[in-house]
Image 1 (tube, rainbow, N blue to C red):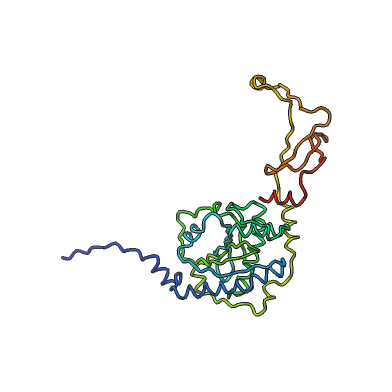
Image 2 (cartoon, rainbow, N blue to C red):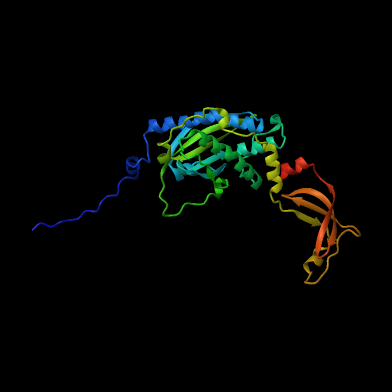
Length: 315
């Protein structure tokens, strides 16, 4: 009598499975498609910027990198802003990325700073107002992509609010990653060169035909005044104000013995001066007062001009 022994079935290698199911392409094919995207953006993104902002930028293709989507995102580092994006009938989950330096430089430029005085931005996360600008920026990135890929139906790209790299949530433990490609591009504004790119699943990339629009005007159908949009966005952003009132000086011995119910008088008599600040920057000198049930301050003078205040608050 023969004995039947059952041997455990070895799981199929993930890379082999991806290749068999169209989720992993050969080096030459992926390289060619990434170059096509680089050409698309090099030719058409500068026209979008110039037509909508009157700013001149230069875009170049820096190359590509392949690997698992999660690894490609991890390898970016903390000087990037990202936006998870979907384009119906093309890809439900690609990622647009941009170097923080470009967003910071663009913000300075749109607020009126002269190019020759804009210094190389320091590496730091973007502020909330700069993330608002990144929304407008990623809209242009997404529209250039939509204009050049074979996505049927003419649907608009949909992307989540941009977030700093270090704020990206970790994937679920049961998340099954897929292979992707990082299309890396440079962008120069004035003297400052930064970068941006796309991280696209190879399953979508390998089915893509990149075709430049017949007319460059199709990329941007209507001229929009970015400066006005930016000013509106900045003014809609919430800023926490702080008011500081100087109190009468006391000895350490007296302060150590203060108890509930004790009263500390203001330093000044009559009209009480209040310094109002935001993000550590003094903005206004005010008078302390009251209106109904609420204590208030009345602005007497400002410490800075409108543009100086805006430039400080966006950082």
